[in-house]
Length: 357
Image (cartoon, rainbow, N blue to C red; front, side, top):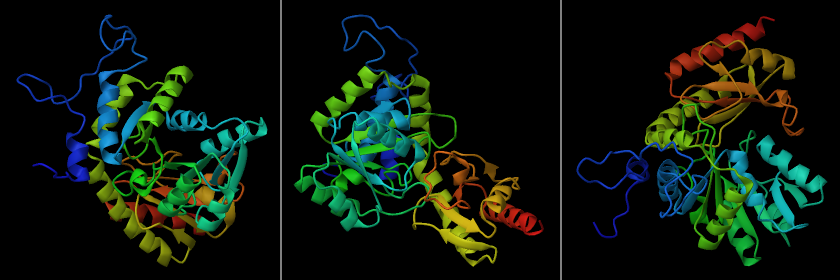
């Protein structure tokens, strides 16, 4: 139907598939070859692969731009940072994924950039810091503090000043926000998380709706050698097919768990941004009790990653590179698709176990 826009769930299921013809497969083939016969668009698999192209097609359709797959989320972020001119300013959240902040701080230490850290919820502070900057990097929600940025206001003000905006959309996914529609120039994903959804892939992506930016990012991917594996892209594409179902279930679980955590006497603080699958909460007793709590569970896995079908949790400050302004006892809970009563019973058992110590 001309002009009819498919829903995101339908796009997730149908985009990036081969053309329908008799005998054709439903899924893009898994092509495991490093060299290709000359005469086509490429002679070497570093330039492209059918599994990459399928993943890029579906993610690009969901985000409203053109996607490029990378070997990891950090590799995707690196490609964007590599576009920043020497000595230029980069604005970033004070709380963000530790791998991102570590890379930015290292670049600042070497004199490659002027790093300006801000409270991303304070739009005025972000815009003041963005004066004369080359890039504003946004996480929304932030990892692990779950702060929310006004992406649209920041993007529009930055555009008027000629400053690029990149948004890490890993926690929200394009089913909950589309930063390009809000004025951002780049969207970055750790596709290892909710997009692939099964804790079996390390993969990243950059999405943009600028052809010029797309060419520049593609050059960085090739020159930096940060290309993805065919199997990883194939698995991530398969994961995206069920993203809407997984996200709806995990999000419903997260809302209920946040409600119960907020009412629990042993919990001092619980934060949930109203969407997504991540909860942050604290219990009395600081780092020691929080650490012991995460080691008491049987249904919930004690692990550092997130966004899979299984529920996981950890004390974030156990990582040496985590921001020092993150509370020592903050527990990041990544909610999966198990029965919510089983997850809650596991939380209650763990809380009871540490309260007896």
